[in-house]
Amino acid sequence: MPSALVRALTERMNLPIIDETSVDAFLACGAGEADHTIIFFTGDPAQRSEANDVAVVLPEILRTFQGKLRGAVVRRGTEDKLKSRFHVVIMPSLVVMRGSEIMGILPKIRDWSEYMTSISAWLAPDAAPMTPPTPQKVEINYAGERING
Image (cartoon, rainbow, N blue to C red; front, side, top):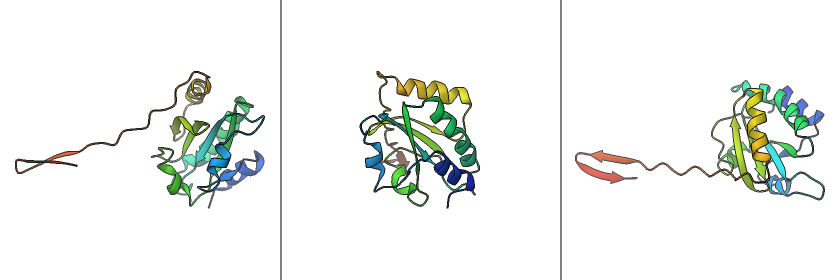
């Protein structure tokens, strides 16, 4: 269940709540809509108090980049189904997208200047999408034998 601040954010800012069935429709840019989006993965606010801090900052980010950025909140209970697709490891996180391309991820609460610098760079027309992290390869030596995994 979302916290009162997250719930107020979605109601006051009229942000859609998305899940695995609606995320692609949200990411598709409609006529006259900004092609960049920001997706808020809250995590459990009872365990991650920073979710409330990000819920306070997100409306300011959307006001600052009005007309350039659309926002949505991932429905609690469906975050695990979307985390890997958007390379979210830490919650809360804000994921900035251009269409279906991940431009960048901002985990936890940040300094305002970091939001402004990062998001401005990701909104630039010539900005390159984020390179997905490569899986870690582990090498284990056991009793002189080499095992790759």
